[in-house]
Length: 368
Ligand code: NAD
Ligand code: GLY
Image (cartoon, rainbow, N blue to C red; front, side, top):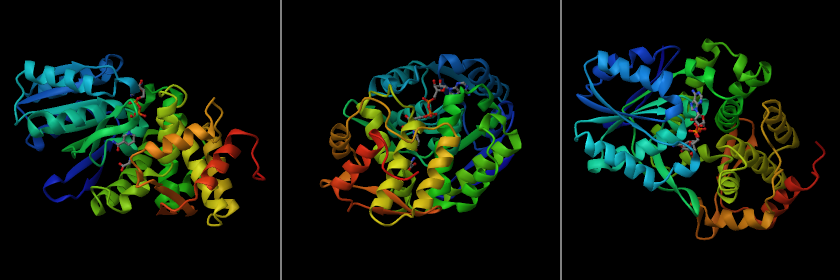
């Protein structure tokens, strides 16, 4: 078991990363003084074996456990679903000393975290992430929330978990496409902050499905350490934390415009990273080798780097203006200088963005 600490004063917590550790969750909750009432929020398809294993473990440690099973598609990441969680919390008489345990991917984690942030003005919650994306990113850092029809994650709250319990053996049942989505966020960490990680991924080109548990534990903890360091420095995203949004500017626009039908979150982020690198190159900042290194890694991972769906650059431009990363008409961009080094700017001329998007839709103009 590896642990990474997130030091945030009284909101500090540990991220535990291991394999086959769901059976020890109850003891871990006991150690942090949780209970006696806990509610597990998960989804039907993950109940056997993960939700049920978490429930067994909690019950063995003496907790009273209730369960809420919800849908976890992106359209269900809504206030209506949060309300259904409140209903279960009230029905089962959870109170301010109680906690909620999210067992699932980023959708379950974001919804559960938001319910925990708002029920009785805030109760404890534990993240048990079961996708690679949730283990390396969404379960850490306290961003919780839901989508609005006009934009992704438009409604939310910062609410840190009290424990993150990441079991990499749950990734064995994850569909390949979802594993690849998580890989996009792993590559993101390499580009924004860790050239060594990027190099490691370049040296080991096996698909993640063939990585042993020890390698996965290593990767997840390395990504979590980067995220912990950034969140410690800037919990509420008034500065450095925004580099974690690398690839998300275009990524969110693609997701929202297509009603979440064309790309998974990780795939949309991959296209967004490709766009950001090309924009940086067009502005004379990133060298062609940086753009190519990132693009080949994304392609090798089976991720998209082109906009190969029926979306126009005009529509994407309009959607960018509606994003919450757009302030006073200026879209905020995270752009790479080199692998491992990015910067944030809101001074990218819209025509450069539109031309880049156009190039990514129509036959590319870069000599790749
Ligand atoms: P997801 O939660 O939609 O899960 C993907 C699919 O995999 C779902 O169908 C789920 O049921 C299934 N699944 C989950 N674990 C499984 C397992 N072990 N075996 C088999 N199937 C499994 O997707 P995700 O990629 O985990 O999360 C994406 C969401 O996370 C988006 O809504 C995104 O906005 C959010 N996100 C939040 C943050 C944050 O900081 N809060 C960061 C990144 C992404
Ligand atoms: N996923 C972006 C963040 O947590 O800040």
